[in-house]
Image (cartoon, rainbow, N blue to C red):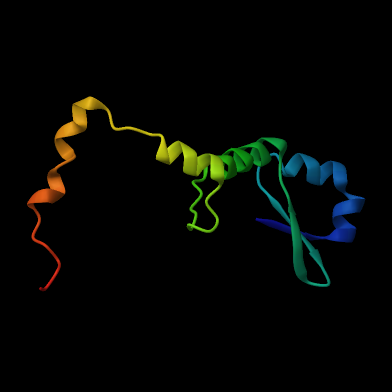
Length: 95
């Protein structure tokens, strides 16, 4: 991956803009990477990945509309045989 200083990046923006179509460019400031310059195509790919990620919730953070969807959902009749599956498991109560 190409790494250039912010000053060099600004001075050669046209050249770096073309190079970014092939690979990301790391932009540095005082020797530290402060960001990356990527093509619009790569940015779109990253956005698609982000929006496709699954979210996880705790009881406290579960949105109300998602809670309602879960409460009002039902299992397809073709899987109704699974409803009593746990009845055959040994009890975990040690009484």
